[in-house]
Length: 182
Ligand code: GTP
Ligand code: MG
Image (tube, rainbow, N blue to C red; front, side):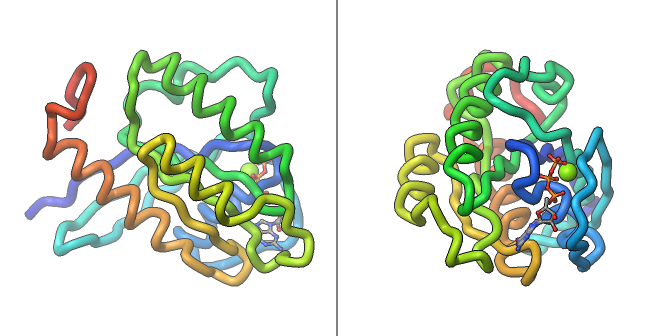
């Protein structure tokens, strides 16, 4: 079977680890220094359930509660990784706002999303509980994972689960509210 191309965007508040998760997934490394992103695109071949994929990963600039949703990220994407940091209640509040804006701009009730609580290695600084993250993801019918980009914990699972959600969505067109992406 030919590989399927999947466009995925990483979104979330500043400094939550969007770039670190992307680089860990694509290159298998972690960088401690912080270099704010404007925009980066990565390409990665991967395989899930005997299906080959070519993932085009767009790592976006951090957003805050006042940012206008960048309309280019609402088009031509199959799914989204929405990231907060378990050490930042602010980033958890901002991810809710980003999600609302995303659905609003897309004019949809559902979009394939994996909600990610990153930086689990900083457990002493945790301010967002596992339970809070899980509940939010359930309310979105999204998958939920806590990760550490630093320790490469559950990073691959994020993309695997998102590819599975995208697959399910395409296989169940009745779940969709508007156009079909293939
Ligand atoms: P913007 O591009 O500005 O939106 O930030 P970002 O979300 O891409 O965050 P980035 O990946 O640049 O990480 C920000 C800082 O957090 C860097 O210093 C990273 O090294 C650190 N960081 C990222 N992920 C983790 C993690 O899982 N654990 C720890 N301890 N630090 C992390
Ligand atoms: Mg970044």
